[in-house]
Amino acid sequence: MQIIVEPGLALNYLKPDSEIQLGQLSMTADAYVISLKTFVSQWPRACDILEMGGKIIIEKTDESPVTQWHMISNQHYVTRMLSGQIRWITGGDAPNGIVNLNSEHFLAATIGSQPYGIPLLDLNKHTCRYSFLFTNRKLRPHRQYLIDLLQQRRLFDKALWCNHDRDITWGHPEFNHVYSETQVPTQTLPAGYDAENNPGWVDGVIVPQQYRDTWFTLVPETVFESPASFRTEKFYKPVLAGHPFVVCANRGFYQDLRNMGFKTYGEWIDESFDQIDNGQHRIERLVEQVVWLVKQDLSKFWAETHQVRLYNQHHALAIHSSQQQTFTQQMKDFVNA
Image (tube, rainbow, N blue to C red):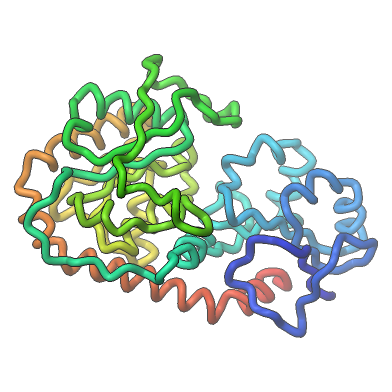
């Protein structure tokens, strides 16, 4: 059985290999790695390949399967996925029951987006212009509520922050929870802090001044309702910049980080919000921790977290290096299993 990979997939860690060919879906009993779009548009052909004894592997590393679930929630798809006939290559964790191989797409994408490499930031600072960094482009229900609470508690008064959307742009009906009816403001970053003039993928660019002038990053991650963690550039930028983080994400996100070998800041911050099932309560508890943290001596917090920040930066780079070396063989083993 040959492994045939559709051209143009976001497989950042895949290297050329004699056992892997580029090609499209054909009527052969081979293993096909295809995009979600191709899977949906050519579902009858994919079914025929499966009936012939072939394999279908969906690549969706640049977006969580959870955010795309409306495209593949047809019961015919789900039954075959739960049986393992259809598998996934994901950029994070997958929902329970889905057989997947993880490729940390956004780690590679973020590292590859730095115009001058990973910035070596000054770890010895004693003053900052702003308390924390918060950047948001697309508005989601959980981000709307987070921004609403941050505004209510006047936490933005001393923060470096932006929000580019006034209206929610979330297409997944299962996760359109209403946490807040308040329309949140739009805000751009001050001059000198934006990445717009940098080449390449703007969202992935680390702007050093954002991290030099703030004590920690409040990260509004993409996945919130699903227990399947998905780590994007929003998380990897502060890690690679050597910055402390507080992450608004799905239940268990912090536990998944620790399982990956990352260190979190539970010695300084009450991270028990990570285990709260109720999304509204999880956001509220997280905001209380931000309220508490900004009242502390943040220069002391910065100094005390030096080793954790440095460790996380090195650990992210080590994961990246490991994926570069091992992913191709992992994918072949995964396809052939």
